[in-house]
Length: 324
Image (cartoon, rainbow, N blue to C red; front, side, top):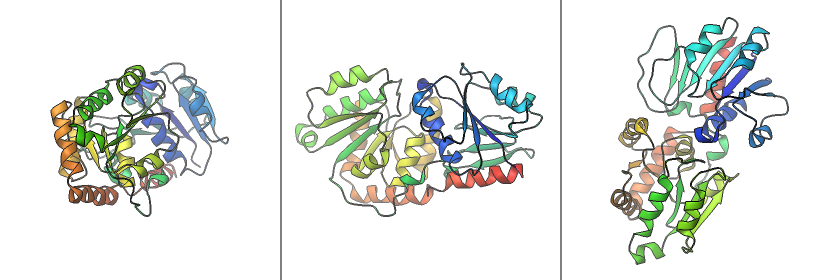
């Protein structure tokens, strides 16, 4: 029987995507799950199933409680989704548990199963099973809308994750504000962030006199926001996968050096448009997408075809099959 333990990064600086995608996978697992997170988190506590057990490691690179659970035979499978723990460290102590690594970049990983929802190429090893590409995008089914509805045109979503420690949101706001007055007047802009984001004060100050900008903090219904917008500007993380499934075309901007290669792959697949982190580039790509309905439709069709909302189910089935 599957006895799954999930060790996931829960620090704000790491973003909420790690927990969200683990939760999507967990919701397809029929048995109780043991969660191991960095620190105490009220938001996570109330979203974890009452059937599950929640443990706090009190460190982003610790796994002492996880190790104890393995040694006490409470876990026979580990799902690891954190950049702060080396898979080789956990692999060295696993005698009774299989190790699954959920990653976003190409690197040498020591695990039994490697899952990467990004369109990357790995150097496959015979002793490791790989689930690679958007077919395995672990998102909730709520983002896969059966029917696309027509909403108010030119409503733009700015979404660089809950934290956005690099402050790309601010540069995008600046780019939109510098559009000519006629263009700006016809736009409505929604910005999503967490209350814990370090750029909240700057964002509020930047848009305080701009009536067509709205800031939404800690939204619990991103699917409704996706429905009301027709263009998004963001990074190529979990939210981008959600937007593809939702039929919301995106302009992608890199937040780090790893994103550049990922964005190039998505653009080549016809799933998004790339912009540099500069006012001129963002303006050019925004105008391109705003004025080209055919391009919007192509991105929508391609995105929904590639991310079908069943990735979490596929992953859960592979985990269960592997342990059995």
